[in-house]
Length: 109
Length: 114
Image (cartoon, rainbow over all chains, first blue to last red; front, top):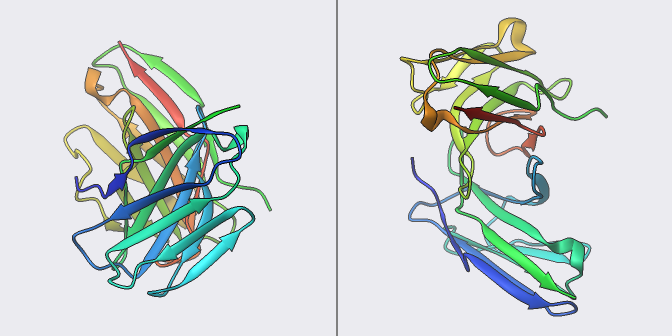
């Protein structure tokens, strides 16, 4: 099945650094969701975006709905060790969500 | 508010055996999803229910997988007979309405087929 492209696939960063990742699609979407998944757990919803150009924050996390409606971005500021995990985007055009391939984040203390 | 509940959390079976997973969505959520997540990949939609009707099951291997959502609340996903490639985490999610709404996941069931 189709999966969205997420970049980077994985990254190591130092604690305190800012992180950026993105998600791209060949289709136009009406909704973008960003999730974090820890080992052995289900994905946890971080941010929901509903409008092109929308910028939404949740604590140290900020996500943007791309103007073209084919991409979305997630930024994490001042990373901490508990930010470790896999981040997934999910986009929806009509009635179902398609998930990205994931960005694996590892934070070095 | 209670989240999405799933059971069991882990299951180990031999190939050709049968297995069933159960999901209880967030109260009042009309839409229920079953996803398969293979190690290292994002969740892949298997089936989506709106109340007790199927909205999408285009990626459900219907020769071995079946799912039902009687009474529009709880749901069960069954695999019969299981194959080695069915080893994955099976995630249930729910949302207040169709996609376009926030979607919440349960903890998943990790299936290992030997």
